[in-house]
Length: 174
Image (cartoon, helix red, strand yellow):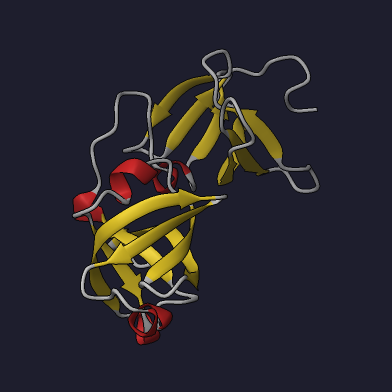
């Protein structure tokens, strides 16, 4: 992942003949990211990023369908198929307190309120009501810990110091 861009989806195919691309979204902010006039980047060959501007957006089944300005034919859209769709870090909105981008959380060290180091967050799952942080345990041989991002468990998130403090609840780490 380039340090200047954040992945918001993958262009998996074209749709119809009017330049629509079918995007499998990985952003929580689809309405803002894919709003007409939004600036996005397609990662093309050689790791280069080509700027595109959203002309139209609509939902179709589980996909987001986008048309980019200047790419309004099937031939023009075809070349984006299979490429990552990104947003520039400079274009990210500030989040509310206690909201974080995944890239800010992944890699944080996790400690118990007792001070014991539990491990590092390696991925984030979004199964439903709340995110679940997958922690690779620092102790050899232990399974990954699944930490629900809820107030009862996550007591402190310090992005600047890459540190998360959690309260162990019964059964959480067994």
